[in-house]
Every structure is written in structure tokens, then in C-alpha cells.
Image (cartoon, rainbow, N blue to C red; front, side, top):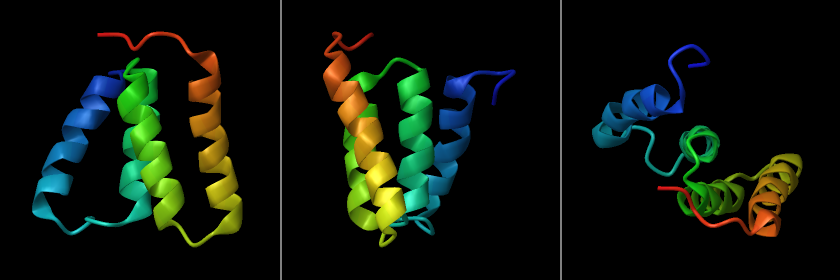
Length: 81
């Protein structure tokens, strides 16, 4: 996705999400959150980081994801459109 950008990655995730096989899986939200953050969609990224932190059972992953969400919140910049 580095070459084609975060929007291309988000487009690839859409059919996977529509299939429903990854529903409730924390990694789906983690990847989406990262791509949304790179695309400048701060509020959506924040929501997905929070969701994935809630869904994972790994404490190190929870701390990492909560940290990513906190970093977005701390920036406080207005969401880009």
C-alpha cells in the first residue's frame, strides 16, 4: 500500500468486511485504523483503534492501540475531509 496509498488499502478491505468472515476480529480494525489515520480520517481512525483495543485479548496490543488512540486525541487537530 505504500506505493498506491491508504485509500487503495481501504478499498481492498471493503470486500473482506462485506464477506463477514473477519467480523469481530481485532486485526481487521487495526489495519483499517492505520490506513484511516494515514488517509487523514482522524475520527474514524480513533474509533477503530478503540474498537480493536477492546477486541484484542493481548495486553501489549491493547496498550499499543490505546496509545495510538491517545496520540490522535492529543493532537487535537481538526479532522481532514
